[in-house]
Length: 321
Image (cartoon, rainbow, N blue to C red; front, side, top):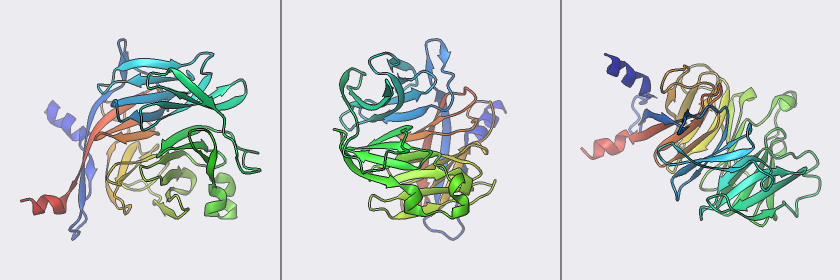
């Protein structure tokens, strides 16, 4: 009975749309939380990045100003930064070659630090050739990397500066200007989470209007999301990420779930649910999807939970029978 109850708690809610030959179903299973030799790491709302070459998770913790690195089994491997050399680290990203980029604050300067995959400092750059006026109210709070480009994010102003690895500005985005929100909503519109997929599409959420957005590199805007408290709807949208198949994952802080949508933004299913037990979530925010796993950062010093996730295509399964 106990094992059956546990299995039911860890199985995702999935939808198969009636009459849809291409319906997908979601299967999710809780694996473990991050830990060190002393036990579970008690962190809140950390920032995540994943090293696909070494299969390691990197966690930037604003309470420490440093980055912790975890092995594939969830055990801490090492700690990077938190000293005079690196300054206060606010974000981390991983390049294709496994080297790291750290968004750091040193002596009132915001720098991008380039280190090897073990944190040895190789170089430090400041963004340059930035459009006039762009940095007037620009205060970086996040960092992402994709396909040779560095994405420096200010969540509050909804601005993103894109540079090459030398710090030279390639392009910039001001989402307030690009999307043109209704005037009555302007002050309430703040980006909660930002990410970049493998194709260079920009993904972000705006909880106050119950929307998530996917913006192509050319500036084409695709919003999705519906207000509500039932499966597949947004109450307080949080983190957003995309897997290798184009499926989109969005956390909901209030409902405490991870929702999964296909590449057409059709709801597939969700998992997590509010609670303090194993496999449950407390205000999930940032997330990373990699190697068939979903890494979810939470509030309440709940740390980071790792789930094994599989999405099944019913049409493919039927064809194989």
